[in-house]
Image 1: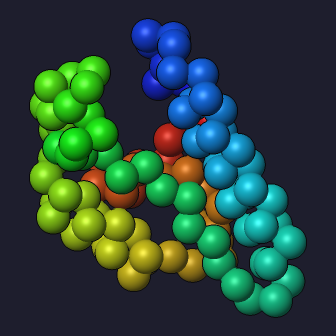
Image 2 (image 1 turned 90 degrees about the vertical axis):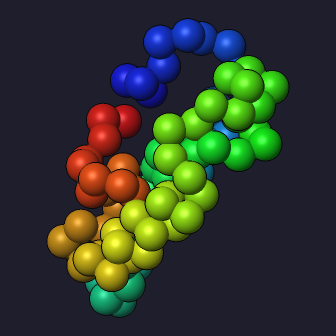
Amino acid sequence: MDDNTSGGSYGYRMSKSALNIAGKSLSLDLHPKGVSVLVLHPGFVKTDMTRPYWGGRGIVSPAESAEGLIKRADDLTLRTSGQFLHALTGEVLPW
């Protein structure tokens, strides 16, 4: 939410918030069972989804984003479970 500087896209933004809340809650519920949960931001990816609003001008390619997603999955531990991370940098993002 800290990243929202333009407003709009209410349904899209609400769906992402709901997914983040579900991921965080799952991480707490599954922690005692030793299960970690990933909550990731893939970056601003150059896809058809970015085309209507930004002319397809994402910042990273789908391949770069996928590489970051895999890296975060490889680094996941119970300690980092449920944090909202940027896939490319591993930075913890503010909710």
